[in-house]
Image 1: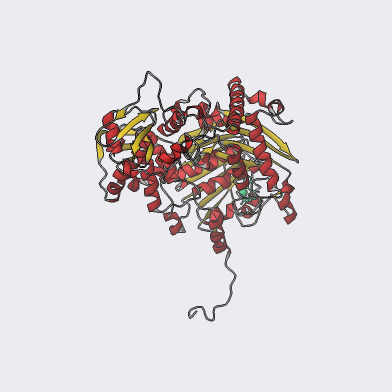
Image 2 (image 1 turned 90 degrees about the horizontal axis):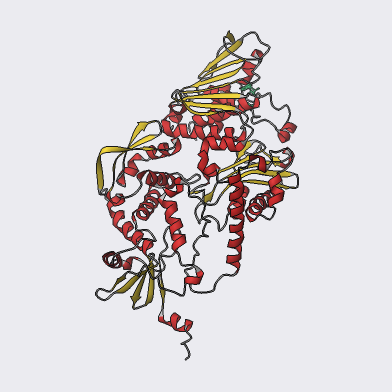
Length: 631
Ligand code: ADP
Ligand code: MG
């Protein structure tokens, strides 16, 4: 109040405005990569090469063979709100290019050491323009091929606070890779190259087959489990691939949605995807899809958010119906023949689908119908409240999911859970007699290699052995983590673990926290991480898998967990890993030691997956079932 009295309103100068605007669109090196890639795609390039040094913090260079910029337009290209892509506000409603705001280059140039070099096909030479700290140089002739090359060095060098907030090179690189992936999937017909520290990370030849490009990113295992989907509704088209439900993730990072060739994020579509897979993937897991929506541009407003990720559909209910019915119908095979032919203009499904994929689709169809029938004739017997997730059909196991104790474990649990016909029988098969523990006061037995039956004063207690053990492990681990006393095993020869750039980055950003759980991690270079100690309680675990699952706990988009939340979710995850699994035969001694702590379970407790850990059948309930009441 005191210092501002007498201050008059002044127009900010352009450099300041640009710096402020930069904050809107340029958040980190990856944002620069996104903007430059989109510009190259808009300029009708057929080949784009991206070079990054130190995750892009030191250098981002994007070179394309597109139509180039006329030397007279260089100055305009780097000034704000100058664009060649729209002329009037009316054009805003019919944008066909990826960019249109005309502020990206200006913003980038204002917060970096920037060099633009470009040559149009009919020009004798290339020209270049440098901008440093907002100071624009002169346009001078230079050498270079047709197309445009933009170099961005030391991003945020003149906004030190923002530069300080950049994460590790690995994390920044991972973010940049994500944007690269989005453009690469949106435009398979572009030849694209990504290099980091002068090493090629991706070399993607142009193709008109999206599956081929997907294979370059995700490998054969996932790609062979993708099912072609095609649908149409009221002038809107949807096509793409939906993964078999056995392929899933803990977050939505495996869900790619493109609207008219641009990557977007949309809640309506996400909800429709979840609905389409409901009952097919476990609660808390997310399906993997690559979907392309196409609609007339007057049915959607893309000018909602500077990053253009969010859009506003004129009729989002219709979008919901389109996405849901396209995926569901494919799964149920109601329209199998219709969708196999694919809409006109798109490469038709049989053309892109391998025989394996057609087989997969058939299997999935049968199985989905089966599931529905089962659900309808639901047995009204005694069973745990939250129903175990639907069992997935036995397809050739990918080595990835076989090596993943998390997936294996949930599948085992599903497979081991008593099926409806078996609820009345408590006997295992004759060749595997149930293990009993009859010591002291407690009479108990293991059944189905999965549950412990305990004769308890309150009634017959049925305990999920995995859930109980998990709880015990949790109680064991928690105080040790809080006091910094987790027993860990030092390794003479560190393990090397190869991860994705994304995963390595997240782990290194949380190195210290992970250390408190008994894992010693070191950066090794590339995407490799060294493990020099591990928690003793996870002696037998697959450490690469544990670390990958840690990443998922640490890095859920849209969630900024507190340290306490993080510790809690890591505690749950590690306890789950350390616990005996369903399907594991226990010795009488093991049963005894588990039951010694059974006061830790109660039927109110639910394991992190939402299933109950124990239930009690009271004498009253049993009497009622057997018609003894009122007798
Ligand atoms: P926008 O993409 O929103 O128009 P930008 O600031 O990203 O705004 O780019 C400004 C202008 O510079 C573009 O409209 C385009 O004319 C030109 N331009 C930028 N990058 C390229 C490129 N790689 N090739 C050709 N022209 C480009
Ligand atoms: Mg642009």
